[in-house]
Image (cartoon, rainbow, N blue to C red; front, side, top):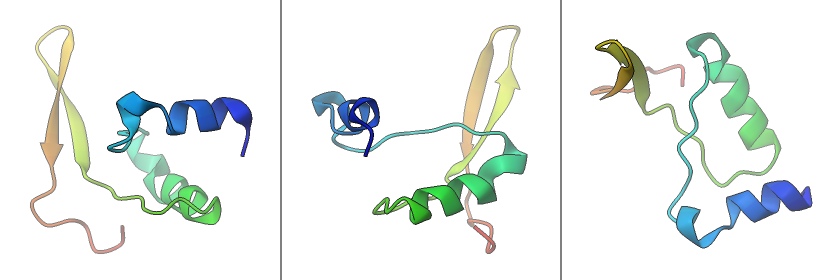
Length: 68
């Protein structure tokens, strides 16, 4: 594992996990790359939608898509 990646991945502030945002069209590829790199888990939790002029809102899947 690259030293920079390890430093971010195992930082005390992120020991509970990382939340990563990717374009919806890249979700499958990102999950496959995580699994291929030996990540212990990777889950599609939901999506971000615009909120107001400068914000976003996270919406969790109630029933996770079967393909992910």
